[in-house]
Length: 152
View 1 (tube, rainbow, N blue to C red):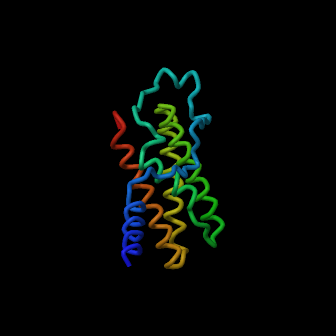
View 2 (cartoon, helix red, strand yellow):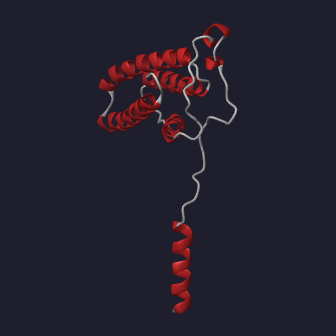
View 3 (tube, one colour):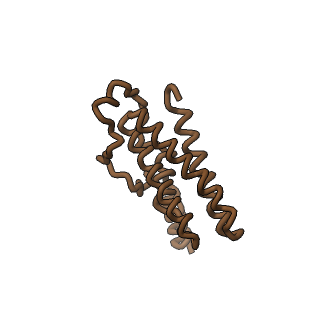
């Protein structure tokens, strides 16, 4: 009985210790895209001073991008794909300190977001609730990131 108690306490202690969370983000350590900025963008570039790879909200956005569900409505799925590309470009632009790229990505995100809101009217209750949860999480994380960026 003492051994069982000892092993139980040992298991609880080892499993409750804080460990570093795995980064399952679809964004690798050396990702770059065309949002890196052209030579004309470089003059207007601001340094955001945010480490996107260690930012919890950016990781949450990456997680949402990779786990976004598929819906029965093909038009909605197409718009969700567009929204996900906008979000990836947003994260790329922040990592590259490209304010013009960030602005373009946010505008594209907002455009897709509005289209998705219109398409939500045709969804059944369950799909609508799932979609709403994902959209709220996205907006919340983007708002937090925008609040932490200087000059935003």
